[in-house]
Image (cartoon, rainbow, N blue to C red):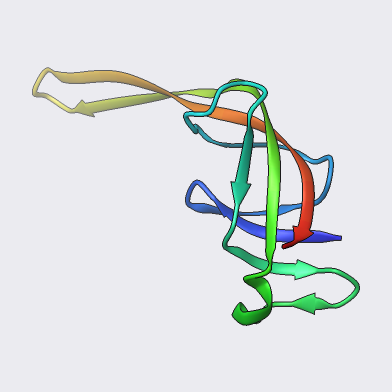
Length: 103
């Protein structure tokens, strides 16, 4: 059984006991996160109608924080002496899916 949920602006395909890295949420480690608007559920047959999906929800346990890879940004313009160097490192939250259930 799997479900497709919208988590942090992206769509994730999840099943029970999957570990995901989603965009950072403000939940403490050990707490639970619930995704109510489920997009698709495969429970023997694929369900994608909104009326049937309103009865499903996906719960996950927060495991902790994680960081993505460092991205270096360099700007340079020739013959003008213009150089800029910046960096970015995205923060994620690691979660484990604990259940996909109908209400």
